[in-house]
Image (cartoon, rainbow, N blue to C red; front, side):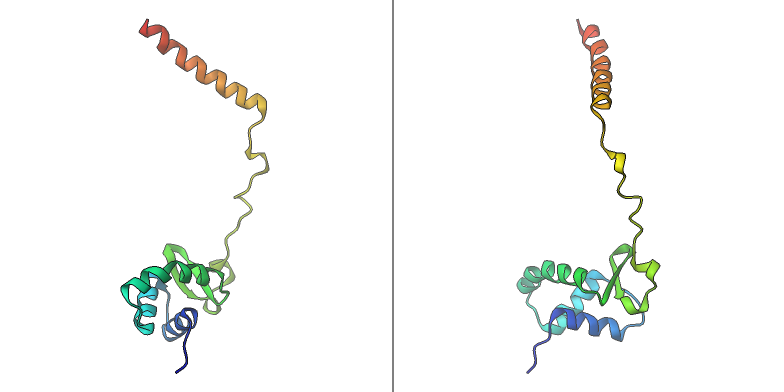
Length: 115
């Protein structure tokens, strides 16, 4: 008997489908196909998620849906990260001092009202 990997079963499941599938539905088909017990299923789900994220045959889509990368366009499988990292994201020391000073001014009137 040949043992199949979880990724091979996932590839087979998606190959037999015409469209994407949710991660949990895909996982349930793998569990059923490989005959995992509930305990094994709980122990292996994180391993499978990590493996499928790294396997170039699979494409993660919006809503935690998965499909074969070969059926998807470049724009569907790649995210533009140019706007994620901004070089001037960190505050200068002067900006930090200004923010701290503003917070102190907001707190002082409350303290004076209490006296």
